Amino acid sequence: LNIPVYDTSLPPVYSLEDIKKRLPHRAPFLLVDKIISLDSNSVVGIKNVTFNEPFFQGHFPDEPVMPGVLLVEALAQTGGILVLHNIEDPEKYSTYFLKIDKLKFKHKVVPGDTVILKMELIEPMRRGIVTMYGQAFVGNNLVVEGEMTAQVIKNK
Image (cartoon, rainbow, N blue to C red; front, side, top):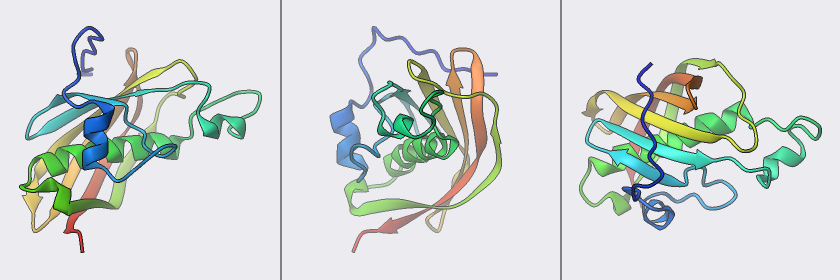
């Protein structure tokens, strides 16, 4: 496993404010706190999971576990940052996910966990379609992985 190193003493590549300039999501559905690495082929984001997350009230009251679909959404949002990084005038575009393949959940994510979200291009974007491989880690554990295909569309 190639687990990204998260050095909390280094400033982020994108802060939460920078992310909000690039993604339309807002609380409680913005699931990336900062970006710590970004180039044309890969991105690494961080999600700090706290007991105050609204979904923990019902999932599950006596055993809080972050819903797997929200881990996938966190990866998708991180992937959106990567895709928009590679185009001119990114604020004029939005990313929509078309399909998810080979998705596997390996470990649960609980309050207090720091999730490292990594997305890599599998192949370059063609006609606005891009496929990425995503992995999320907590410590040395791979918690979820899968392939995601997205479409980049110019905003109306």
